[in-house]
Image 1 (cartoon, rainbow, N blue to C red):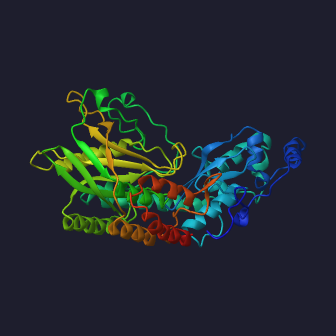
Image 2: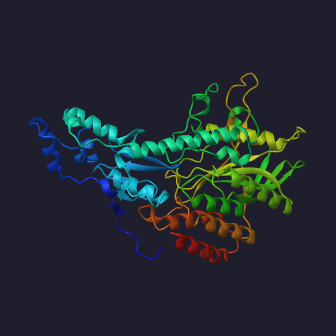
Image 3: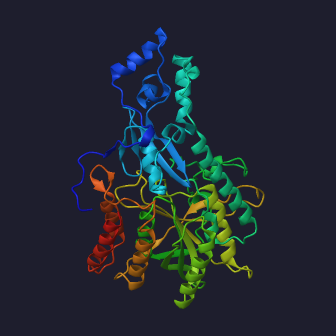
Length: 458
């Protein structure tokens, strides 16, 4: 971290070769009025501020987005036409500056961002709004030679993304699905408004599988929670740490024991998957390693966790189906009952209370027999959290392995940046992990070593 924290959000001006000039209000007015006298405003002279003043776009949180080589970036459109990157709070003067910065994080060799063709406003490319402006205020502008904007580069990127998705789908058809598979190709970084389960109705193939669903209570569906759950604080600490490291979704397993006599599910260990969600080749090896670790410790697979980095910690329709699959898989062929716990962690959702992550344990009740085509019912699970006496060496080792794994990742969280005006990302993770602190206060000195490693990663 080293340097003093900035007193205001960092403004990034470098936008590559195609960056737009910032125009004064008077210049913009002159340019618009000149259209009535036959003078032409070139595309390069149009800024987001021009589009805002003429009502073609409106300021808003999360209305801008970039999708590049499998990574998603979300931005807020400010009243003055500048862009605030949601992830870090950095301010960019133009779409090109933001696009160039984001693309270089994924591909350092990238020279320019093709911002107006790459950045989308509410799902539509900004260059289309620019064209709309020209049609409205300068209908003859499209006839000017040399002002055509090439979209070939970004179209090629979209095409490659499409090819990769098709190839992945074809490969998936021939592979046996595992617990890790359900996390492939998730959509992230967008504000998703949860819906109530009662509004879903019959399963609909056209419905967005990433639709978030509010949890029901067992009592609301005239049920009792069929099992008790106890979760170790070290499980929460390691899981929360994992979810804080990256802007992408992560997944992991939960190990523990199921006591049929007391109907108690005890979650004793978290096993983070150190692999990319779409990387099936390494996923199988990681899963095999975790299975061996479970066996060596005399533990059983009792659940899974995943993150919603910047969204509510509520299950999506895809999560509901995945959880139901896991429940059936763990039940086994002997029809004996063994619960499978699902946990969602939301580390960077600004709707959270304070710096603590929202952690949501859930289960899925099958739909009524008379309505087999309905979605399963996601229900909140009441959990007893057991505070551990000390931080185990296993947990510390897993934390350091995660640090090493994400050290060079393009989606690594920048811990020196600000999560909110008076709280850095480092403050955020420290505050959240302190909620799962062991009784032995010596843990703080141990974690300081981990935090120092995080600081050196950025």
